[in-house]
Length: 301
Image 1 (cartoon, one colour):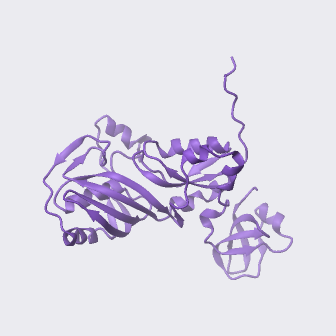
Image 2: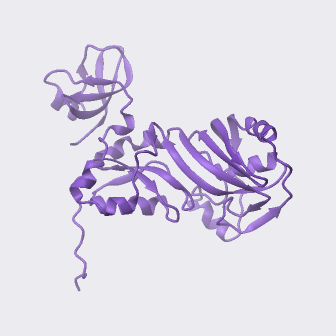
Image 3: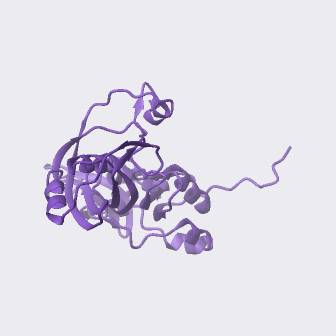
């Protein structure tokens, strides 16, 4: 029996879409929606946001997925509000209330002194409600069954924490951090250092690598556009690494590069360069100290 809805015809779409992810859906659900709207054959996101988090989620389509790991590994920036006074099972408003303790009198001096303790290289224990796996099973599946296992602390880096505002029982922060940082855990730890418990009520990502929240676009806006207008929103395939040095492929060597073959090049050594043939990006390469252009990631455009 045929489906009443015709099967979507996937196509080769290459580029980066800057999504402003809404609250209430997972990063994967948002990714699949964007992929469906573009009818893209291949897509990947660049660092998951919790369903109760919103903000910048760059989506790599087609050949751009070859550069997505550079954004996964990049510095992130968030704005968040920590509600003080009690903790929850999940570290945010979705969880059930756990421990409760009175909030001490807050002053700007007290908060700033506590925040300073968390700037730099720190150790962080991942939460049970996370996508990390134990024996192939996500920790959140175990947590939902009331099972808690020991987790090893992991090194993360907090580059900056700015106090944006505070009330008698909440603080709002601007945080710049390394990949792998759990803002929920950081919020809990800051609350404990203030002498109470806490959980996140707001989390919004405003920067991923060199990409800012503005300009980014909502799913609703994307839905309102024609296919041609949607394609106009796409950044180039190489946008995740646009800050890398750029070189022109040696004359007559474009096809060889695209086959993954090395070439001689008159250029100083570079660990990573974007290689172009005119305005067409061929891929990513290394230039050795022997002036050899070595393809690392070849684009099929």
